[in-house]
Length: 411
Ligand SMILES: [Mn+2]
Image 1 (cartoon, rainbow, N blue to C red):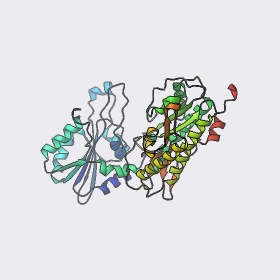
Image 2: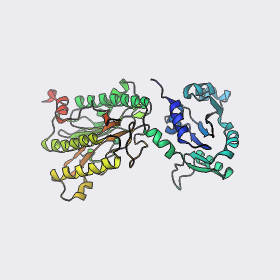
Image 3: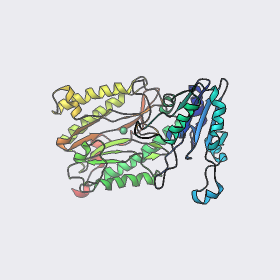
Image 4: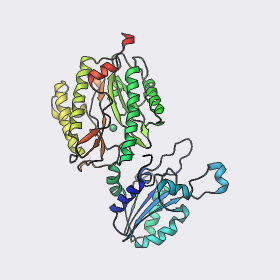
């Protein structure tokens, strides 16, 4: 299955709309070189099109749902400068959407449709006051001025439940990304040595993912040794790894817009110190217990609450805190998030998980005074029966790690 079932996604969108409702989704603008083009995820989700400066309009009448694409018109004289733009035929072939017009025809079509529309769903995300309005926001403001009877609402409450529930194609991309990430992590486990720089480990990770055919990482890799691991979003990756330090990896290769998100922590010397092992095992036990709770009906908030209970107990046992509320000193993030087109993907935190949701489970403990930071993160698919751990083959048991990281050459 090389392409997602876009028709099915648009059918689900049509079902989520009421008659006389419309949704307008703009694609991303063309970036200036050398920035890489990154399509707007909601546009990509329903069209599959990597074309800049395009718009998707879905209009539901009493009897039908009309999906229409608007793309940029090609100026023949500009082909030699810009390259050929997506043609209407190409757009139809990729997206399966038969009605394709040029962007300069969008006002004419909206003039025709808008008088019958009650609610129009648009992108209401803004950078807040002081950031100025982008061209899309200016367009929506113009629409509001010209059609004051139409109610304009955010499209996210309509789209979020659709995108949160991953289809088979999406699970495939995530699995491919996780497999390549696992190869990179395994390579780091076997090849890392004290004295190497964090960026050398990053190079091993990128090398393996690229060799698997995945040229990009989904987010900037975190390769944090020793004390650096106690900084949650450390990504300078420029320190040498000390003799008895652990290294925390929080990494994920990207496959067609879907990123793995895996954390592992390992001893660079090949053996945990007794204290490192104690802290590591505590986090691992929590990682496993929380994963075992994942099933339809449970909420992210409940997983979080249980994590805090377990972390608090572990911190007391490790002799780090006495009172419950002190746990925040050593654990300050939440246990996970939805994973998909965005690494921190859209999806409910307080509503029950349902089959098709993919979440991360990533408890951690950060003890700067001992130069210890441990996070263990897996990617979990919610199923009818409970869950599938998509990253189950990436080692995390103490004995496994010490076996793989064995440093025979330097004993
Ligand atoms: Mn994560």
